[in-house]
Structures are given as C-alpha cells and as structure tokens.
Amino acid sequence: MIAIYPGTFDPPTNGHLDLIQRGSAIFEELVVAILRNSDKVPLFSMSERIDMLRECTKQYKNVRIDCFEGLLVEYAAKQNAGAVLRGIRAVSDYEYELQMAWMNRKLDPRLETVFMMPAEAYSYLSSRLVREIMHLGGKVSGLVPPLIEQRMREKIKGDPTSIPGKTPRRKNRS
Ligand code: PNS
Image (tube, rainbow, N blue to C red; front, side, top):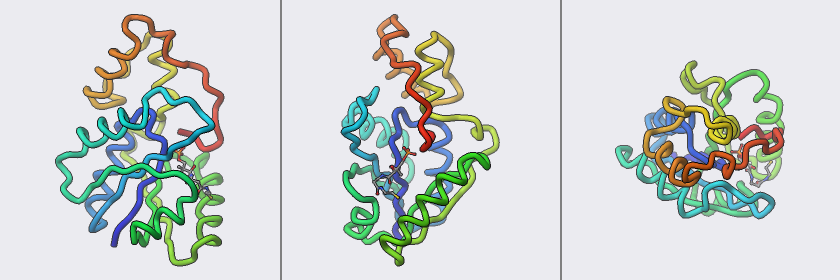
C-alpha cells in the first residue's frame, strides 16, 4: 500500500524523520507530501524543504518527496494512496488529529488514517519550537539532522532574530 505522510516540515525535525523511518518500514511506498500553504510565509521555501527532505531520506528507497496544494484526499487519490500517516506525540495532538482524520474519512471513506508514535525522545519536539529556539539563539543539535541545523545557520547568517520566532501556536501543532 502507498501511504502519504503530509505536513508543513518547516523545518523537518528528527521527529519527522523518525516517523518516516517507521512508515517506510510498514508501507510499500511512503510519499512525504509538503503542503503548499499560501496563508503563511515559511522559513524555508518549498524547493529548500524538498531538497532537505530528499537528502535526509535518501537511504530509504521506498520514500518519495513531493508537494501538494488543495485537499489532501484529492492528492492521495491521484497518488493511488490507501493511507495517510500522521504522528501523535501526546494526548494534546489527538483531538485535532482525530477531527482531521474523521473529516478526511467523510471526504473519502477509502482513505485510512494511520497514527504512529515517534520515539519518546521526540515527543516534545515540533518545528515551531525549533524555529523559536533558533530565533532566541539556542542550540538545535539533536532536534534536527545536522544538515538542517547547518541550513538554519546559513539562513540566519549570524542574526538569529531573522528567523521568525513567535509564530502563533497553531492548533495543528507543526
Ligand atoms: O504539519 P502540519 O501543519 O500539521 O500538517 C497539516 C496538514 C498538511 C496535514 C493539513 O493541513 C492538510 O492536510 N492540509 C490540506 C488541506 C486539507 O485537505 N484540509 C482538510 C483536512 S481535514
């Protein structure tokens, strides 16, 4: 079965990569699908995120990186996917994820949502917190792969405040 792992991945974290590894082990093919969201200005452009994710997942032969816009269920149908993979870190993720999974089921009953837990070590990790730590001049090693840390450093060019720090906490938690 083909599964879609959708998200914003701005930036990809070790938690995302942990989930990609777990997903690639149980699905025939895993498509990591980055949402093109015109509502927000991302830290990393779409092509930067595609490039970083490709580099960090090149060891998984059944993982493909792509982007999408519009409805996830429509994108999943075009990819012949039977499942959507989402990570659940804590109970607080559950409510939003359940709502989204139910809505996606309403829109396309053939598409299953599969929840997986990342390693416990990543249960508190989010892209939003990584951006905030970087903005405040903290260290993000161990939270993101070394390549992503390096790309973040290149982005700030010695000025951490150039990274948007206090993006409002979104319900959808990335
Ligand atoms: O990384 P995120 O921000 O938690 O991912 C959220 C994502 C991309 C999974 C979600 O926003 C989404 O699927 N957007 C596509 C639009 C859509 O299908 N909306 C209806 C979902 S119920």
